[in-house]
Length: 150
Image 1 (cartoon, one colour):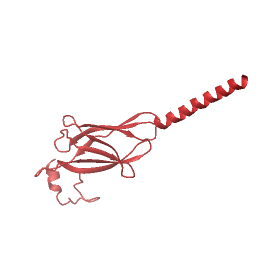
Image 2 (cartoon, rainbow, N blue to C red):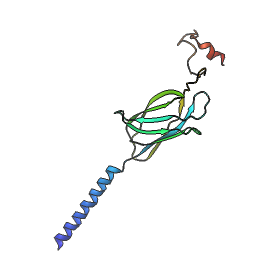
Image 3 (cartoon, rainbow, N blue to C red):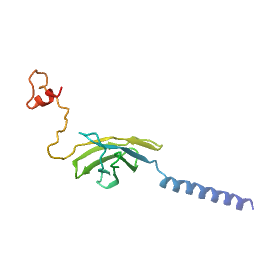
Image 4 (cartoon, rainbow, N blue to C red):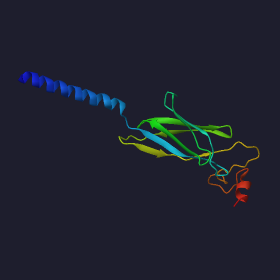
């Protein structure tokens, strides 16, 4: 009787430990990427595709930013991984950047606002370019427009 009771307790402990280990395989730390997408010139929100790819070029997530406020959200990122984020639309230039998610064991929400460059004809895009040659007083070619705006 005593051995049966010990075997039952051991079997129950084994089942509980196995269930805990199985649950840990399915419950992982989740990281979410959010932000807003705005037009670089007008600063108005834009609707664009935001996609995230892992190191094997497999798409992990996709979001269409809201045209009213530019908000986007992608979840399911893993801590410690580096992802490639692409931003594209018919109305703007395609952009890519890398996103490294910090290691964490708690839920994390990263915020990344994105400025997109529109592709409209005749539009002037402000560029932050130095007007002068490095370590010289010589003005760079084309810098007159930049200096005239000041």
